[in-house]
Length: 347
Image (cartoon, rainbow, N blue to C red; front, side, top):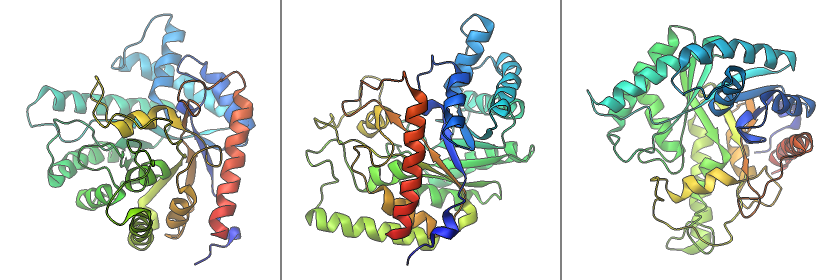
């Protein structure tokens, strides 16, 4: 099934603030680069709020100093509006669901949730991105995970806010789109939908940074892998209602020059999480994932909402991105967006 370019040419464009510069880069410079490239919205990254607040307060502001973060959040809102942008989503809210009843971690998760909701009010956004937990201590029952997300959804609903649930491909219990979609259906709240991601989908089901080939290696070889991945995307296109997709994040991935250690690192981060943190360029710039195939499958649902560039580009070796010219990089990202839509329409 071809997708008419006329039906997708007006898709709104977004760029994650954590995907340009560094946390130390002044937020106003990031916003200027994003706006100059023609993007309409931003995903506001929590690290950028912290950095902005610390500069304003001339001290290191702590992640749970919500009074201060809300105070400077109003300044962030004005700065974003000055650049003609919209804050589409606050991100990334992590390791919320799955903690045992009565645990300190669970109390902390709900304390953080209430604080982030206050920040959403201050900055003027109505959507919170929640990444599927990667804690090895989280309870694995999907019903239990869904119950926690129901509580969060109800907290958000009191303010007419939405929850965009994303599969992180290194997550402990919901690494695939099928997992988070099953959980979203169990949550069964009108303000809960999906944050889909080309990297998280292809990087989990099709690619593997720990193998020499860079691919998931299974019986039947690459032909079997391609067939299985194609089937997964066909099911996605036929299964998920377009109104339950809140945003699509876009990025590719470099194939690691040396396969990553399959074991978690000292912090407990799994290899796909390490891969995600610094080897994710914009599409058509050295990556190898089937990004077009993922985007087309999502467009086949009828989704025409936000396409958001969320990249973590440290160059092919993960350590040498030069952020001296952010405007050029943002323009490259916009060109990549345009090319992605053209390729998806032609595929």
